[in-house]
Image (cartoon, rainbow, N blue to C red):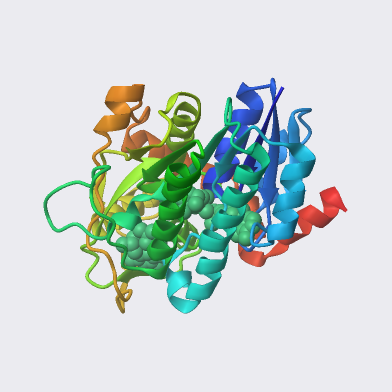
Length: 348
Ligand code: NAD
Ligand code: TYD
């Protein structure tokens, strides 16, 4: 039986990956390691917590001794590393927290895997999940490819770029078998309402203002989170060793156009008069160092592994909005902070 460590599995993308692996691979023992920071919520994965192949471990990847002991105890065959500080605005307020988790935490996992596997890499794999933000900002034209030079602009993207470099370096220097993916902006269920789409859905529900940074003419490429989880499954099992793959939605939207679309759909769902939600739009001070445009060329993963998004943006957004409307309890628990009690209730 294979033992797989997934870090950050109580977060947004990690919860979708853990769910997929636990349900699809009963032959694996899945270990979800998560520190349960503000972004970690065990309610995200409560549907699988009693499965026989699922194990939750609370712990911090920044603690090197703890990570070493964990690897000695469990002797993992594979690692999918998603734990991170993930929000650009928070990285502007507290860059060091991002260095600790994203750089040092990744280093601790790399060291533990290297020391545990001791050069015997048969059947072993370290998969580092990263972001397209490491490439910096595009102008009006062009796409990020796997060979685009790294040019990070925010403390978040600089910390992710640094961790990506360490992963590659461990591959080159010690032969550590790794794969790495750089993905565009995800959206979907269980997304913490600090990021654009869930924040704005929540604010529309509660008639609160929608703070659009700057003039709103910033572009992001949006991918449905379940399609990201499918891509991660594929790369983990079939990706070539020491390779990087870009993952994207072929789906560019200017923020302001996306926000107006959200407003229109939400007016319909909430049976409010047309134009009601748009009135909540408020242009606010821009984010410092705001990247103008991200867009991914995902042709490599498409040609080599046959992956492409399975849902259109219209379908994905519909599913996402319906999920938030049907899970107001989840939203309430997250915004009130009471989701933090779930660990105590279930695990202690
Ligand atoms: P998230 O913030 O929703 O979740 C992060 C998880 O990591 C949380 O459960 C948190 O408790 C855990 N964590 C944080 N610090 C930890 C630590 N020191 N030790 C152990 N656990 C810790 O993040 P997400 O949006 O799900 O992103 C997951 C990964 O995917 C990240 O590596 C991120 O850089 C990458 N990524 C995200 C996006 C996106 O659009 N969200 C896009 C591309 C790549
Ligand atoms: P975000 O969801 O924070 O993701 P990222 O910064 O990683 O791309 O932001 C997406 C875009 O939306 C980005 O251009 C910043 C913008 N934005 C706003 O205009 N207002 C907001 O309140 C937030 C959170 C983001």
